[in-house]
Image (cartoon, rainbow, N blue to C red; front, side):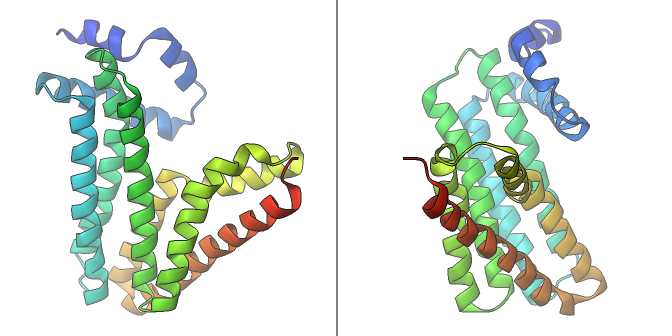
Length: 226
């Protein structure tokens, strides 16, 4: 398939209109994903195969990133880069699916699973970096509360300016770029310059997510619609 035909299928006008509202970083990511999708299309890979590749990259990336615990300087940075790279593939699978006319409910669910898995696994790893079993368990609570429970209950809360601000805060901390790019690179850079900061900073991020999880539960108890 020629590029122009691929572009028409993978990036139709409704998608262009939808993505035009994104910020510049997301627009760059989507264009990179578009070219990656063209590459995968010519490799005859389906969108589901791209998602499976993302899972494999995430597993490898998280394992390499865990070398922070050993005080390694180089490999955690490689792991952080791989986490960021697998996120770019998230913008490629949809292009492949549209180009191959293989959009399906299962494919959408698999895409969501990869996003949930990669963020959740990093949150667990963040707890492990504190070297405290209690924090590891609490991060597991934060994982299911924020990534699963919040998605299911978000529509139950009232609308309004205050709740819009609250949702913006949650979106930032649960944003894939925050959890799989900003935080990993902050930790990897700290590891290069001062390894002793890894544990306290991991505590700080863990407590932030724990606070957000508990606060969301309180919001649901106090303001859930009848």
